[in-house]
Amino acid sequence: WIGTLSFRYRSLGANVFPNRGVNQNYLFAFWHENILVPCREFAQRDVLVLISQHADGEIIAQVCKHLGWGTVRGSSTRGGLKALREMMRASERHHIAVMPDGPRGPRRHVELGLIYLAAKTGMPIVLLGVGHDRPWRLNSWDRFCIPRPFSRALVIASEPIVIPESATKSELEAHRQQVEATLNALTDQAEQLATRPADFRVQ
Image 1 (cartoon, rainbow, N blue to C red):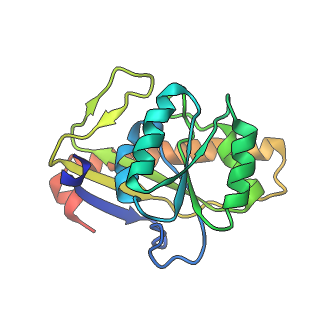
Image 2 (spheres, rainbow, N blue to C red):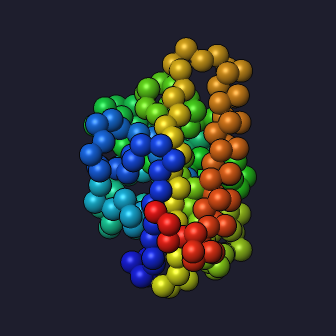
């Protein structure tokens, strides 16, 4: 299904597509509703994805494993500390993908855990705005996105964002707000461009 899409990937900075000649591991973040396209396009690459331990997370975890992703199970509400420790160990060898508004929302809201993880591991955050051309959406908390077959899908990657390890609690919150605003802006931009064939074709 996802393989029928016309897909484009754009980086606003250096190309940091996983395993495409990059010499550093990154912390990729995208909204929970948009997991299908990154799951397909990052398949078989050196990426671990954080998936919640809730029942709905099990379905996503099995899909990710089938496509070749490694998984870390945990969230801010269940298994979070264990997952954090595992991701900190894995950060030296793998990229890590996080859906910062999962597993239960609120929709398009960045939890502080993403910022804390970036500060503790030293991994730069790369935000992925994902857009589709007139997708179907489920009546769920995140309005989960199901792309129409043979439609357009666009991912826009931010420049890497570094969170200082020495950041104070108030500074971490300021970074969280900045990251949330940037990811929402990238997602809006990707959604707009995906609906316009002329803009979509421009690399």
